[in-house]
Image 1 (tube, rainbow, N blue to C red):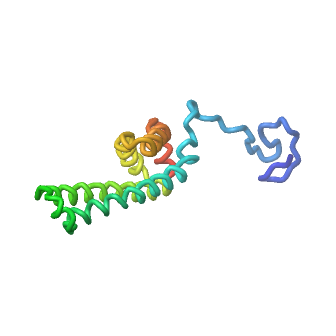
Image 2 (tube, rainbow, N blue to C red):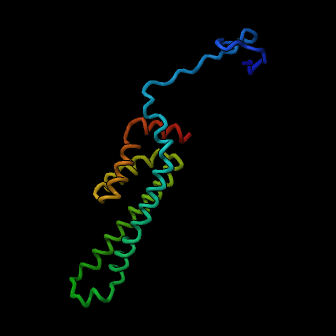
Image 3 (cartoon, one colour):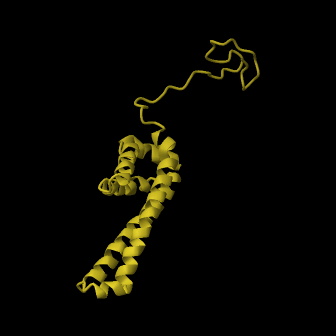
Length: 159
């Protein structure tokens, strides 16, 4: 082993160079490193899953919005009440907004933006009600992003 500062040959157990004084002591690891790296390892997977999940939910959102806003002819033939069209349009619009927020948060999580953690946690708790895929994605998101260390790691990774 050689000193990378002055080039002197060193014996293996040395902690500093006897020629230039450079320290070779190993850095201490921070306590509670159980969660360290969890967000970094799972951010891209979680981001892609949220983008795909949100894109899939844009399909029924667009359908409900178009059925409600356009007032498809079969709604009139079925003698539906007048509030059904605006109700479908409102539900479709809300689903579309939630899907767009999910896509944006998934992209921002892959770029380690700290605000995406809170946004995806809120969406994860809402997705728990959507059995089975939403429940699985919600549990995975909560497992990765809920610990307080995840916030510190995202803030560190954003720098």
